[in-house]
Length: 260
Image (cartoon, rainbow, N blue to C red; front, side, top):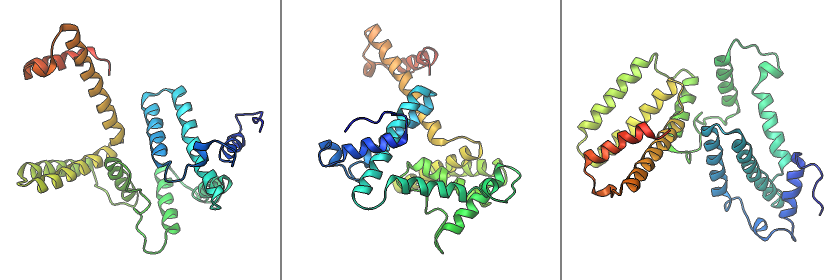
């Protein structure tokens, strides 16, 4: 098989993946299944998120390509199994986009983005099976903080939300109090969960993605601690042998010197 002439076309990617999965194709690609690629798909999603966090457009372009490869592979595996093919995937999402934008492709009128989201939820409700919860579509395999954010965001769209930030801040204070009063490890674990859930709610109301905020805090901590380790190497110090005050002094120095 000769390579497609225009590698920028989506069809070229589909054609190449089909060749890799052919009987005389790549041994590794041929033995992959939906299940064997689950980890790859998740890893690529996180790498896209990292590129977004870094604001690196070149890296984002590359990582989106890696993610697209996973989609193309899953679609080809499905085609080989007689399940569906990439055209069905494209048709399905295109039809959904059109169906959920009646204010663009139909006669519905909206005044702002908030009304668009309200209508979006109403349309999703109409698509769900009778008796199904509006939260069923949120994957439980999501990171817990992101899952909390998403289910709270969805119920807020239908009006189940605090009237103002004071109410949810008071709830946070209440959860901290209950955590401090917890007597057993089981109770403390439960109160920690309630605390994180409330923090995710506050973040949502403030327009902050808690997963992204925590990733940034983790990245900042990593850089500062690595800076501390480098200071110790330069000064011939053994970090575990330092007193808490000495370690904390290094931390303050790292806060000033490490670029987050």
